[in-house]
Length: 219
Image (cartoon, rainbow, N blue to C red):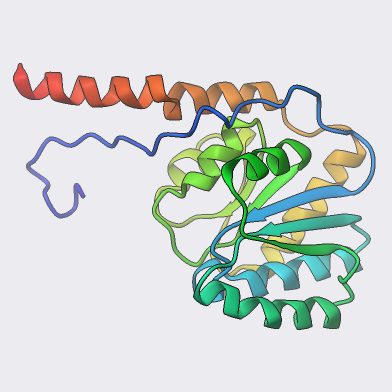
């Protein structure tokens, strides 16, 4: 916005995250495969699901023990899922990738509590609320540098890994690295990630940002 209106005072107020997205009651498991999660429309032209699955296949071939649950798929995104299933079969990932279909907030909260890393390999975005929800649950993310994602993930490596959109090799490398971190029991501190998110995306934080913006106009 600053590029289009350079002389106008501006303040960015992010999306707000539902209170249901909080830290899990029980610690995430330190054992077993690296559990990946993806939640989106499942539209390949937007989310690059096919590229994400190719990277997953590459990482598995390199010895990483990974599983992934994918939630979502309505409208045009639902039409793409049959192709993803064929791709998963061809990559030998049929026992590692599950397509769970559309889900409500409570189911997504539970999935985030059970996962180790959230993956979003989008070709373009603004600042997707699903990333903020993942951080609110203390879940680190692997995401592409599109829209406003880099404004958080690019300056705070504790939140996860930032990639170039379309970089399948980079995503595969990141997944191998995250698998090694789980094996070493060196995944990020979920409490710190959750605190970062609550300070910026909670009802209180976003409400306060709006109030401050209104007050600044009245001064």
